[in-house]
Every structure is written in structure tokens, then in C-alpha cells.
Image (cartoon, rainbow over all chains, first blue to last red; front, side):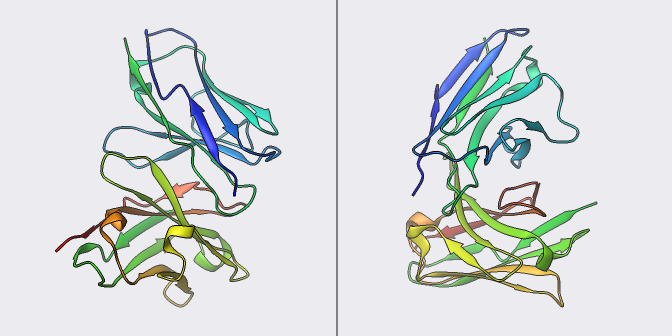
Length: 107
Length: 117
């Protein structure tokens, strides 16, 4: 089974900062990688699919990159409404494991 | 507009059973990858199960042999039959869908399952 790890587990940054979250797969998954945002008490929301494709309606300050085993989610200019937990997920082969999450808040 | 509405959660004793439902509108359940994801209180997301349009199913190891995913095309509804429930199955259960891959493009609001005596 493919294992997903994320770093850091939590992150505090200032409004306007550039923020990067890393996701690593235990084996190559090509670009079969999705990123989700879950705000406190809310349903997860798909942000990025195919490692770098922005889901419709998602602000352009979010971007994804990577292929194989190493992936990043970047927020180019952090906004207060970006406070959330971010999860990566491999959909390369079952089980389609989520990463443990990265909690992002405002400093 | 796609809408997924889960139901069937509740309080059940260890060893008991529940059947969760996910009623869909704005999409055809049998043509989509339909997924169950759970989230234990204060914890992260855990992928549970998927059913493909060709009826292929997969499960996370911790529920294999206890949970069964299925769908009813006439009702456009996804199900998760959960047997031999354990305390560690306590979670909010979300259904999700995607037309192209086993990922979560659309999500329901979730239904809470509590396994406790």
C-alpha cells in the first residue's frame, strides 16, 4: 500500500506570506495526487487534482506541483480565509490514502 | 448542481450494524466513482471504500470483511453496510464522487456514527 506523509504538520504564517506544504508518497504515483482544504467544522473541498490542475472556483493563489513521489501545495499570498487543514490524497492505486494533514493558521 | 445527502448514522452498540445512505442528485451514481471517507473526532480524513462504474470495489484494510459498499441505480443512491462495528469506527462518514477518478470532487455533509455501549 502507498503511504502518504505531509510536512509540516502545522504551520503559522502572516497574511500575505507565501506558504508551501509538502506531500510525499512512499512510491511513485505519477501525477495522481489531489489536495483538499477542510475549514473547521466544514466539509472537505477539492482544491487541486492531477497534482497541478486548479479545481474550478478555487482562487488562483493556490497552486500545486510535483510528480512521482514529491508534491507541493503553495499559497502565494496567504489570506485569513485560508485558515484550514490541508490534505493530500493519492488516487493512483487502492487504498486511496490521505496524508495526515497540515493545519495552517494565521500568525 | 450536484448534491449528496448522507443519512443513516446514529448511536450503535459495539458489534452492531448500520447502513448509511448517500442520496445523489445532479449526477448519476452508477456513472461516477463513489467514495466513502470518514473522520474520527478531532482526527484526519480516512479513505474507507470506493465503488467504480464497473462495480469494482475496494476497502481500507481495517473494514474489509465488515463493511460493504453498494449502490441502487433506480434510487440513485450509494450505501455503506457496516457490520461488527467497533468503537474505532466512530466518525463522521462522508460520501464523495468524481466522474473521472476515485477522488472527491463533490462531497456530502456527512453523517455521524457513534459506536458505544
